[in-house]
Length: 249
Image 1 (cartoon, rainbow, N blue to C red):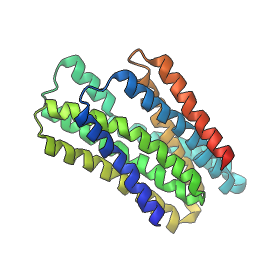
Image 2 (cartoon, one colour):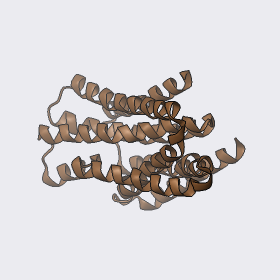
Image 3 (cartoon, rainbow, N blue to C red):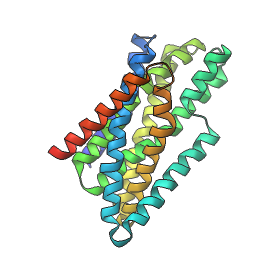
Image 4 (cartoon, rainbow, N blue to C red):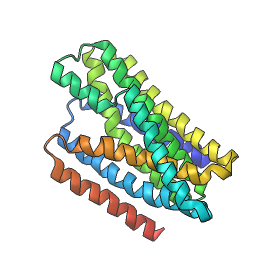
């Protein structure tokens, strides 16, 4: 349990680390951010398949493939529903840039809320990974999510400061978004611990949420600023590193 708690703090803390970087380097280039985010997408893509979906099939026994397919689509559908309720961060940031409306505090608060809400299922995915009993895979899954949280934390800072929010309150908001991920990680671990029967579905559900985030948000975001070639190779590098790690361990 200590490992799960430390992992939860690490996953949530990555957002805070990103926020601190955002304070220091207020103008992070899109190219750098896209490459880091795409590298994380590659790790998460491999982790979702190797660490969540394939174990879901194994644990599901005779009907493992059924649990996996249903779980993937239910997980994706849940995030799709969240997107309809609260748009994700890149949509809000792009809208601000187009409209020149960074001073709109209500939009900035919506922006922070979007980050927080999307962090919950990502945290659940990190926690559910420990339910398989393979701590190495679970840590790799959590590492990929944490890596993705760093640039996400970085982009929180600029719009809030531009809207007139004080640095102190901006940092508190960043901590809050990270805390949501900590809660999600503990919630995911608790769910599969008390009800092992749901483990096959929970693993594929978490895999589906990760696939949705990668396809709907991370890849489009990293390929929309003219750095798509570098982002593509960064994704392949992340995916390959995950494959090598899985083969070694």
